[in-house]
Length: 279
Length: 126
Image 1: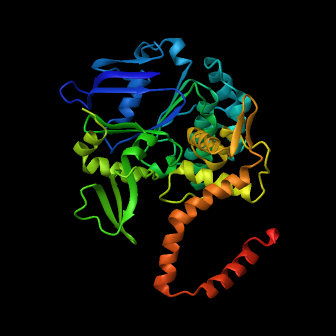
Image 2: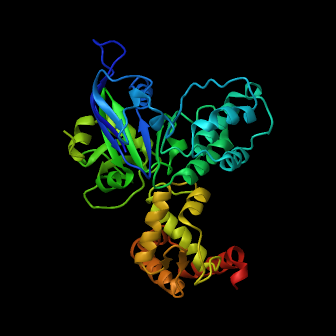
Image 3: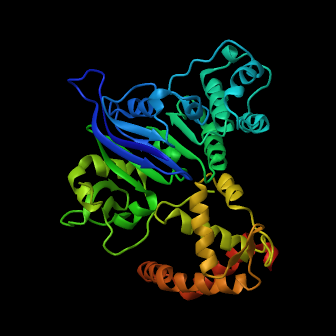
């Protein structure tokens, strides 16, 4: 379990990026972390990875504190950062050097992921394009079989077919012992892949729920008219009337549209908090 | 698989599985893909497929053999027809009738078109 408990963080102590933030992430789930530019997503991920330290509060991952960077923690944790720097070696040399740090690394799995991503073999990593480097790192990260896998904007730089391949490999890499946490702006890339969502804004967590819970409380549908309907939290004009996010009083199940959910949360944070009973 | 906009994904996957069964692609009594395999194929979260399987299990359309996998029930097709028919008659048909009425389309024309549709879309089942 990843437990973020009352964490505050800022790059200078008089300007905090987030304050008293708490999160609990459980194995067997793929979490999507959403937030506007500069909301602090990457900083939060780097705190969880032990690359940055909280000013207050505590982060605990299966009994370890990431900031201590103990081997027992590091061998079960993998972070794919947004900006990647890979050494000038062949893919073979890369796995030979790095895989010993990950006891559950599975080379055949790694090769399988590279094949699924249509990667050419035997290349030097520096000769690869940005997107191809990213594919190497994603494949490696998944094949380490660490209990905790964090990806910061993983689909940036991937071409159109790779986004579908990305969903396939991540879906098949989830197991009941694993926590996968993905931050992104490209919500369409994660559609149907994540089962829980965390929305970070204005130094607070606005939403931290499973999509099942969200579709219980909110309904995503089209209405002929959206005015004077006090169930509606967010609406935008569409061909058939208004595409809306509304309170789900009738208990109708609908498909959660991540983009509209995000807009609804940004438009009306207080009401969202009330609907989900967050303090 | 192309998902529709409005209906929740786990129910759309349930419809997809039912369609495989009704079309005879997944015969009664046979083993169906594992949760993980189907999730990979459809590019969705495995927990969503799990929810679909539990839902279909509750409707006695598929069943779980512990440690072996999921299988289609021998009676699956008749149960699916029952459950799909109920849903169609309740929610889709009134909408369809409304359009027929608004556009003044006769039952005869509908019948003719239905016949052509079946002949072109599902020639193998004739």
